[in-house]
Length: 129
Image 1 (cartoon, rainbow, N blue to C red):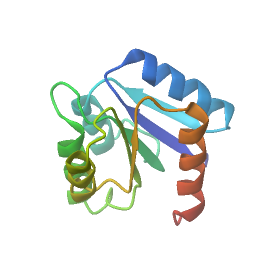
Image 2: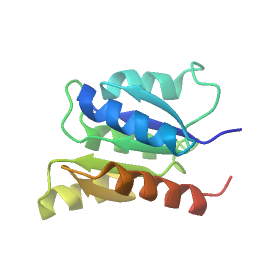
Image 3: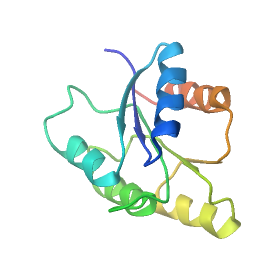
């Protein structure tokens, strides 16, 4: 089974940059423009397997990243998935809110795609299963 990364960001540009970069690193990617669609995919049988890592924006319409992370952490079968928040919100309060919501890693935009790829690869090495 290959490593699957879920990208949830309302910016098409960010989704495409991450998708291309992660695929070049040999990872499978599934991308969503909002948290509702991503959550529906996680909680239904639409995915062949659960993602190994979730990359999540904070500021999104319909369901923000903090709420999305809390919902993932509330479900026992999703709780183990590492969450990387990737957002333009760089203040200390936002970072603390991200950690409290369940983010394992908090990175800010603008970002270097290679830094995100290396961080994801690091998560995959330390995640059981």
